[in-house]
Length: 288
Image: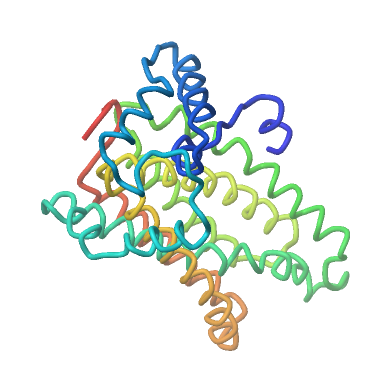
């Protein structure tokens, strides 16, 4: 990914950030670069940005003065308000969509680390009851490498399936998440090292499909002015759930060694149902 970032993709600096720092010429160049990449043109010039500043006469508007750290922090903190949340529930359809998305991110945030964060331990304990004893460290890391490599094509396949008529975004997410949950359950049925590696590899493949589509779908269905708020909260609940996952794993792991995996499987299945229930399908739509 690092090599692709350096040699295949050119990521521009945010024009908004450049403007806030008074670097108007660079901001204009970035906008023109993006327009060229998308095969279009823009009439934006540095003079037009300056005219906006002169017209607004607002200290926080476009200007040539660099904003200090305290100024930026104060401006960002002033944006925390329920006024940013209310529009996300402007209609019942949007409100249900937002609520389900936040629930999905929470459930996945809890279920994902319950399995993946402890995968090395699960794989190293494979064959523990056999004559050969626990799996060696070398074999464990080999199995983890296999699992990671098998998962890579998942995101590529998702690029194709999200545009299929009878699958789309929702179908791709729901099916891949459901299959991930089933594979997690199957993982617990045998302690054979090769069997567990096969199940974890297939689960990694379907899991990458799920995550790839979920990351794209979430901002697609949120209103543009409040997209940052909606996706930010989704990320927040996902991280909070991820922090709680190890604590939960320790507690339920005392009941049975497979309990954390089974809980993760249940969370994935419930998430797939929530994905299927999403009222908005964004396939083939430029705007919602």
